[in-house]
Image 1 (cartoon, rainbow, N blue to C red):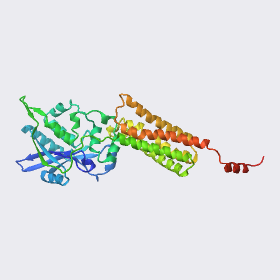
Image 2: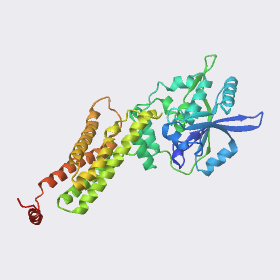
Image 3: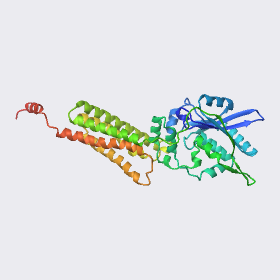
Image 4: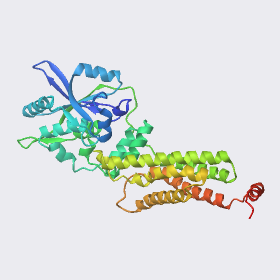
Length: 394
């Protein structure tokens, strides 16, 4: 069974399960591997470190179908043409998997989820023929493509995942790997031919039926184009910083305070994101955060810059440190752009570069412009007279 996408973030990717109808026992049961509980001990810590526990759960068909009707999520069934021996093997494995000591597993959104569990069980039952037929076939999609496609209506989550995913998310995936999505698994198994022991072949899917059609639009076919939007945001921030510097150099105290505040916030957020990316890469089991080129745009050095920026802008202290840090951070961001010319840097992060690089460059220029203006600004006559009057006599 395949269930369409829903409204909540964890429902955007759809769901699936194995349905077993046992006429001799009068049962109609559903087995799914997508059950989790926000109340389980240390759920947040497990989620952040990549150790979230999911489990297999059995449910009645009638209640499940009623639930998905209530949630307005489409439901399809595909009857599989399995031999009696294959059906028995599938049932026996599910019984074993349902035992308390076997039902839990460490969830991975791409490599080990509710859909890949169903895929792997079917592949096991038919002797590896599902994998053999689909793994050699590369698709024109990636994990990032599907993630951004399906999360585009949850903009904050989509932005966060886009920043957090590293290079591994941009490698082309096979039809086998693409079955981490229930809807794509439904499509791929439809064309599978299974070889019998006598040498004949048969379609794996015997028949299909739509049990409920949701009153909602289909899944988005493409991820949104966000590069222009991100570039507009980055350029807007850069222009704002430049205008504030101009006002500060003209002696407007409010412009100087606003510039110090906004740039400190930018540097702090930039540095925090950089720390998160490093921790995700080195200290968690989130393998898709490894080799993340966004570290060249979200630099942990920005945390140090966030400390010295207000001192340099408002008090004229730590000016050299602010200049050096802002210049180094901007240079590293430029390296991130230049690296796109090399084949080893294939991560799809043009939107992130478009957002961050204009701000980094403008910030480096702004710190130097403010410092230079502070040095060259003439001393007012009254201030000079006061200074002479207060000087002790020789």
